[in-house]
Image 1 (cartoon, helix red, strand yellow):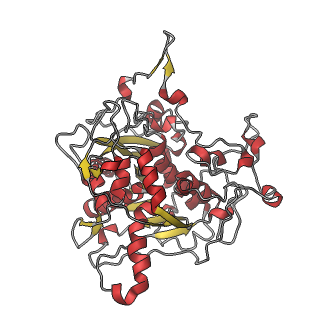
Image 2: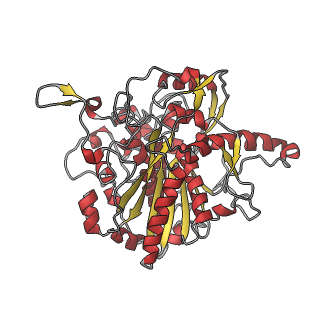
Image 3: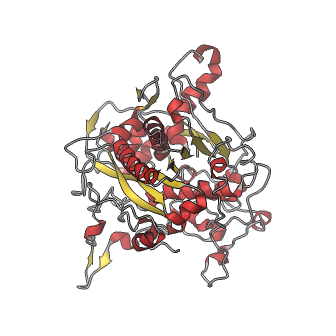
Length: 504
């Protein structure tokens, strides 16, 4: 999804190479708050599919298509609600008190989509599927959006943790810990990316100690559908999920807007994204292979295995923010190097980070079309957009909240409530509204849901048997190994139950 924002670039005269842990979030927030001058709220849910290997080499590139052009609604600055608006609420504060099984289920029905999956994934460019949105398409978007959200939920943000920058769970327990076993996928590999880059000196702060890796962060994972889910969706689906910007060094990379060429045919990509995607070093523990090579190696392994069994195999990559850009890059790599894939899909939850260069160089300079039409460095975006209007949800505040606008859970909430561009928020939307405030304060106060409620208990400290509060020791299976484990080729529900406690 995207949020259009006008931003001024800030430069620092002095840059230096520092470790990933040597940055301050306070410096980041200060820089962003001073850089943001105005905002134009315009949220969309975008999907880019297929023909990615043809970008820039003379073949047809799918243009960004808009569902319907309409003026952005003005938002009042107050977060209060009128009585009329409150009467529209399906949920009230009392609904978030656990009183047993009377509460509305948070999951929609899971129909068999095996006969329609190609249409759902863009075979006919989603004709007659977006406005109104087909319920199967809505559920697929939310499913892959939750895969992307998992990369935030499981990331170890604690700068005092010995494992800062890693995933808090091992791959066998990830979906179980985050309540995602309902989707019927098994995580097969974790992906790591280097974060050692040149940054301005004002990002630096004193290091608080040693961490599990000085050079790398956990960036996402590869998962694959189990046998039962594969029957329901009509093929074996390999899913790649990329994390968005978290580390301050990643924010700095997002701002590096110069272009670098990738592959053949004159295709270019923003240099900051390309650096995170392709950086590697023999001196590192987790990035002897780049994030790009790790993903392609695992996808190729799974593809060869399932093709050897005569199955139809698809690759679906998803990401939010920086992760959306990395998802497009990995889809381009797969389309260029893995011809045996039957289908490649990108669920790109866009926002300002990957779209900012395009906003500057396309939307502004294209107003001077006579002067800029011959320039070859303008950005081009692919796919079909699903526009979402934040003002339609009766549960969201109307205040300016930059971090809230960037929140993936808000996008998933709006997607779940969307029916068509002429209708109000769906009264029977099933996804849990409380998830919006997981990392934000976007829900109206009448619901009485705490802000930023998704936290590690006691900030990671535990009370041990000796009566002391200590940092817990991670079990050996939870300590990430860059060399992985012997690959398992058992994707039956029984095996996944053993690894992920999948409810079957």
